[in-house]
Image 1 (tube, rainbow, N blue to C red):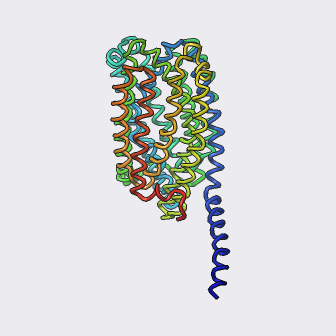
Image 2: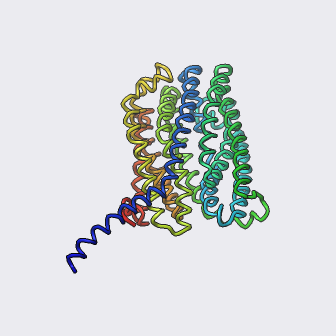
Image 3: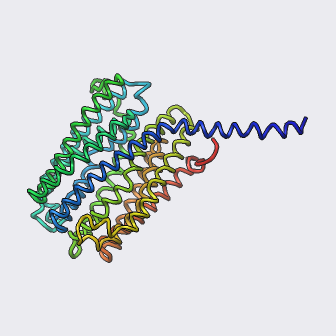
Length: 453
């Protein structure tokens, strides 16, 4: 009898393991399909954006292109102050409530859009008012005041677009997001390139603003259609009851933004104020476009994973949660590491797209390509921490990232210019990724990766 038991037990175990693997595949097959669409959209959108910027760099020249990049960085500093952490908050709670409480999902969407528009308008006014000081003191170039004022539209439209995309992500309308992203990227090429050729720096900014306006209009149409399809009515009636939900999650996200964004801007100001600063800023910005391409696909997958993780947590489905976390992290690293290696190897050829004068910045691109790996880890591990309602822990890691980034920039940029800023990126995001991993180990998420739940 004991011998029979020893013979049968292993045979029973194998189907169980195979069934487990098949179950994981079934659970994540939808995510893999969506990731495929996101990949195609990313190729079209980021490739188009890169082409538009490369044309701008050739039309404007290295110094003027550096000025455009510095202006974009300034708008980026104000963006977290205006967004109030609403995009991520909208994604999380719309994903949780869209099925079991669609009326709450509708109120959250309406309240987020309204709050984003108001905060975006206030910060846009602040950017216009502070433009003379920022140009004179930050860039040591008072003539850039005009371009800073012209860029203010990017701030308001960027906040609105972020909230719209957050709502669509929470509704898991990923095919619609992919189509919008692809069309927006394709439209940006002729719009930005033509206006930059005609009107210089002001034209480049106008082209970016117009492209973003078109994106907001398309996003709004798609969001209305998706809400109608799901029978979600967006209304401000009774939205005051959702203030606590938004505040509990938006506040730490907001604190993260207002800590990291000014530090990022200050680091670029340190670079701009060096000898030949705007030319160095142009090199960094051109190289950073490729880093952004490297992280864009994992960023899209992170948007897919966030609502899925939030939903699994709300359902107390730990097995599905850990499976989704494992798949998300593995796919993101697989999509980033080989591409980052190729990007570093072919960095001189890639930068030649922006003009011959940019080729000398190949070490900057090589370091930024390597930094894409910890950037992606920071993104994916952070999404898992947020889905587990550890928003304040995520904020603490962002504070660490900001301190590490500013300290490294203060030390490295005066010594190595754009290469020093790239090194600061690598150092800060590596430190933040390690801190996030420790947080997930504490939550008993990280140790379970690859384990049988």
